Image (tube, rainbow, N blue to C red):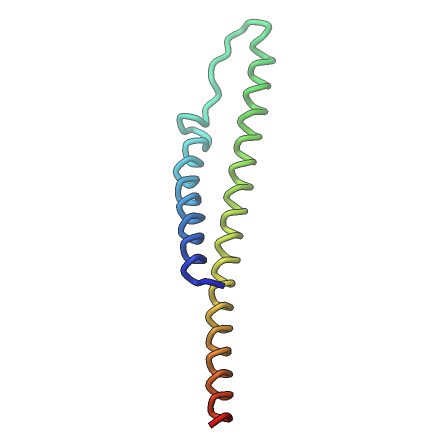
Length: 103
């Protein structure tokens, strides 16, 4: 694995995660996008309220799932980077050993 490319991808994923972290708080209960709008008393208000609550819950759940997936990607990328470094060090050590045997 190319550590430079891995680092670039890690940076991209972290930027997406950081952006997501600015969106999620806005949807929390009590914040601007976390409050239920006033739908009034018309017959259609109940359906509108239900639709809004379903939409908000689905959006919230999707954002939480995306956050979890991005965090998982970051962990995997960190593990991959560590394994790549270990593999490079092992390969270099092995090559030095083979070179010493040839001389």
